[in-house]
Image 1 (spheres, rainbow, N blue to C red):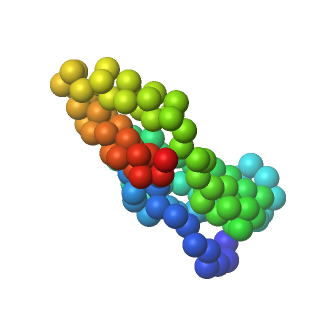
Image 2 (cartoon, helix red, strand yellow):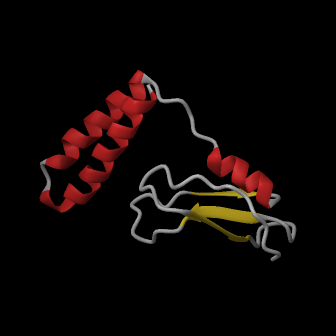
Length: 103
């Protein structure tokens, strides 16, 4: 795959850089954009028919609503009391902080 320059926002869940690679599910130009951190609890990924389409899909961020924020808070409360899920609770807490800034 030819190296092209596109701007990719960091992972919306952990803040790590995004990366892209060729994707086998289509034309030779098809790419998958994903979080580069293998320890990211979510590891989101999107595909596009071209690098530009993949970057556009990756960089799209939905608006945060009050209902979404309430759901995040509820998830945090159910996770924080379980020692084995404290790392995940921390990720949810970070998502809440980011979401509050986007309301």
